[in-house]
Amino acid sequence: MYYNYNFPISLGRYVYYHCKINYLSHQREYWGRIYCTDLGWDPKPNCTRQCSSNEAYVENADLIDRQFNYLEGEKVQFHCKPNSYTPDGKTDGERTCLPNGEFTPAKCSTQSSG
Image (cartoon, rainbow, N blue to C red; front, side, top):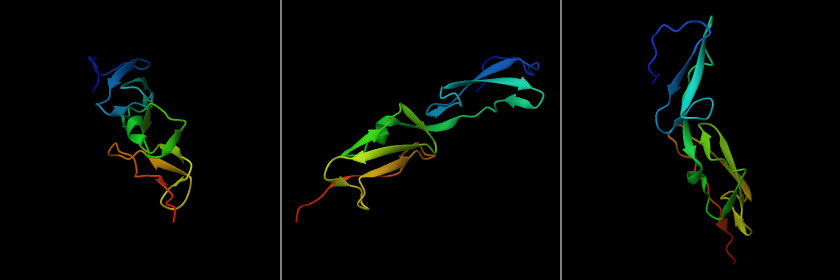
């Protein structure tokens, strides 16, 4: 959605646009600023789906370099707490932000004694 501008826009001028809820611009904001150039808009207007860091939580694990939000395709790394492992027996893993705004599944389970 563009703010109230009279189109066409003159070369060298800029416009602000607003992304829908749960999407962020290339500037990791809900809005973006783009310039009119001889070759078109620079940068190209783009709103990318985001995943909330609250959804990145992994039980029995600590997140590494946690961000406030993640854009589609970005990954969050995690390290399982002591005596906890991923289903494939590792102590570290990652989750990816998907186009639906959710992360790929992940878990760390405690090792059973037996």
